[in-house]
Length: 210
Image 1 (cartoon, one colour):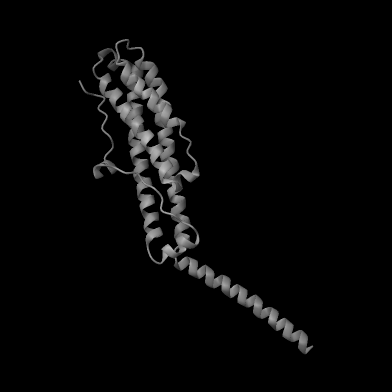
Image 2 (tube, rainbow, N blue to C red):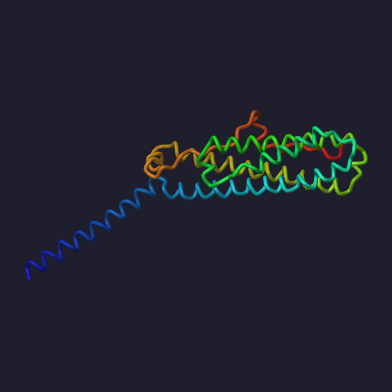
């Protein structure tokens, strides 16, 4: 009986020690920001998904814009070609969840999207020189849709920038940086801008220029 009691006590001690370690580990992870990493990582992924949705929305507008502009016989072919090529390049880049952990792939994708945005802005600026195109109701509707989409892109990008900033601060700050090392949380890439105002100011596309 005495041996049995000792074995039972030893087993109970191991059991209690195990649960104590689990409890201490949980408290330690909470104190070192593990739950914050989970929350901010999900926020970043969600913000990135919205950016991708708006980029896709913009790309989907291009075929109809191009088809409408082609009806203007005298329209600058070079401008039209650049839009077509920029869309092809932007949509050919495969984006995966790992893109957020690969700065090189992220920057390559973003550069392609930047080229498409610039090409579309150029096309809209040139279209102002063609009265018949400006009077085309179908083209007018597409311009309004593009304007709304560009604004949505800007809003989505801003949210992503804010989410990544909060996440990266957690990755680099003590003591949460220790948790980042243990669980391999790495800083995520963000958008780069030449002008800080570009972060909060939507691109101007003037569709009412006379």
